[in-house]
Image (cartoon, rainbow, N blue to C red):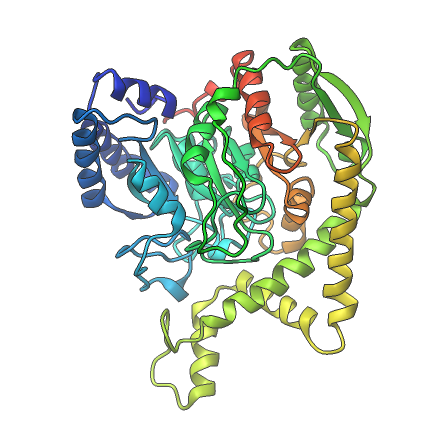
Length: 483
């Protein structure tokens, strides 16, 4: 049962081949058995899962249907879940139980999805390797000595190891797409504002976006359908109709114009990944797509701009964690200042502290114009490059990452080296565009992803291209040895 995709589970439940309760118990047992190797979960919610599964079975028996009704999933541990620990992978929130459900959690629960637990993540979603979690690093099921990517590495590792069919994730600079590439999954970052951020604990508010991680585009379409939609509680949510993402999966790619930026194939790209990307391009050409070389000239400025904007917003968002209202509080503070200093110093890990300090500096008097304002101007230039490109092409294709997953600890002493792994993904966040990573092959036994970008609210087009590609390739069906 654990090898079934989300779509296969939906069909099996509809045909009464098994019940949601049976499936949920199988997967919970599998998580208990195998997750100690991976460390992909922070919290398991067995009682809630069984309760939700039984309720889903009753709803089906009463004539209800739906692709997510009775389907087991997990949530990245920054989506608030009522009465359940929501830690953000941090000591700061280790004792925090959310008093309400995030909109994404509530929508998926209403659709009948079964929550198996909360997945591990980089602390406050800051990282590209899932090594900064207070609960320990997550291991890549394809090679337990390698990282699964971050910050949604727990969700990615759990789905890749067949512990569950799909999971929610978030993407601030590539944190859905990069783990998807490193673990042989399909991951989608929707258009900014497409999925509600209410109850999703913020890292960088103008960049964060929730989305699905699953084994195939067909599954991502099902999960996104349940996640997307306008939310009046979220001031950044956009009131745009949500199409039926599954309905457009089988649209022909004949005549589809695919742009390939020349800047993507620079000296920083592993030549073996470049070859796999070229193979993907040839496969899409067989399906009728037309390839055109394009240019994104301001891409070179994206990383420095991102690593000013994101830490600046993080320093503001994380100021609320001060030991006063909720979260970690130091013992026996001498006074209020001591309470603030020691609670934050003890509660936040090194990477979070680093980004808070960089952000506070960039926003400080005398430096705001030189750094933050300049970065926002570069952000506009990056967006303008994409708008110009989409006048010529329908989607943009390239590598998701410049290298395959690295060994655990290999970049710990050089944070900038880890930041550079986001070079292909962060531009979509700066511009607010939808982006998808899908499996494209292997290098030294480690998965590689190809990235697709589309104009605003064209998630359906990305899913369509990925689905057609996956009907004609089998990379996404490969399973890591031992799982």
